[in-house]
Length: 154
Image (cartoon, rainbow, N blue to C red; front, top):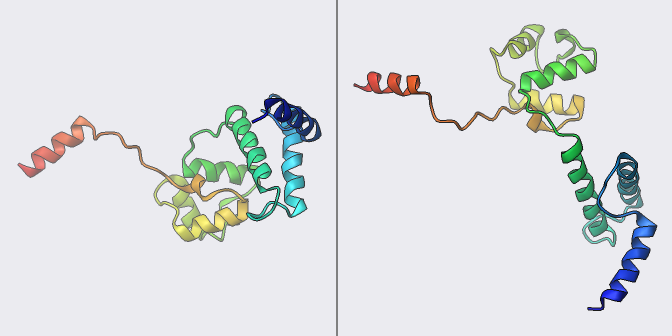
């Protein structure tokens, strides 16, 4: 392994591509443009020459996003309310998830979204399904719950 050769090649490659850890918004913009150009090139499929480079660029973008644009924990209802607000929608504007009454029940927490409804919302808003999935906390049951269970079984 010739480190001098690697260094020369790396410097030339870095100057041509701008590849490196993303440190500011300007570099972030450059890297997203590079990712877009790689997609448009058609050279990022498994057997194509630029697929590894695309993976590296996406990894750098993802690392920057996680640090600078953290996704807050939000319930599926909070996410739906936010998306409705951002798109200027009323309950009656979401027929893909049901009647106005069904939407009202979901927004009030009396009903949860089912797989069909989540699929429709993902298609409509272009977001990942995970934002509409509620993952229960894995906390131990409260002492009141334990007392209720133990007295009920006695």
